Amino acid sequence: MTIDEATGSRRVVAALARWRILAVSVLLIASTAGLTTLYLTQYRVDRQTGAAAQDATVAAASSATAELLSYAPDTIDDDLAAAGSLTTGEFATYYGKFTAEVVAPAARDRGVKAQAHVIDSALLELQPDQAKVLVFLKQETASRERPEPAVTASSVVVTVTKVGGDWLVSAFDPV
Image 1 (cartoon, helix red, strand yellow):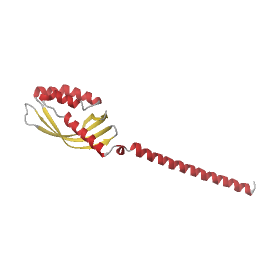
Image 2: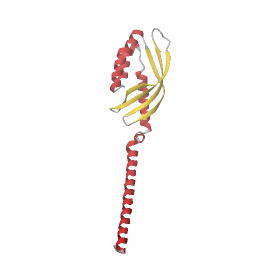
Image 3: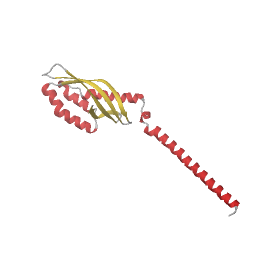
Image 4: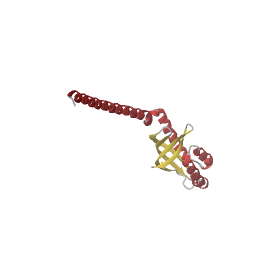
């Protein structure tokens, strides 16, 4: 092999090495740009929902919570029907069964009346079609045997799911 051939082959090897480094660099930059775009447009749910949507979600969860936990003996059927219309999924089935077997008989037989008031609420998690809201509430319960209302404070994590444009309660977990 002559000196010119050796020098030429070294130049080819050096050129190939530079092209490999350039190709790997371009692939890394393209991958980083693609992942950043995906993160900002798809993964960042907070950018998909504005402050007004967040406030509306919290308000829907809060008002539904108060309605689910408020009833009176005189209007028990209407109260439970209205509250039941704010539920969805497995929770709707559970709520319907629980209120029919426990709440309605207690309201009718013992005159139990409950009134729930939301003290505060905060958004825990928000997806485009589902949210979790922490709700702090005060509930006053009275009956014929105990006409003076008993006041209890509690907190629940309310999961709401968007169904046909409305936020409906799909889970109700005391904390």
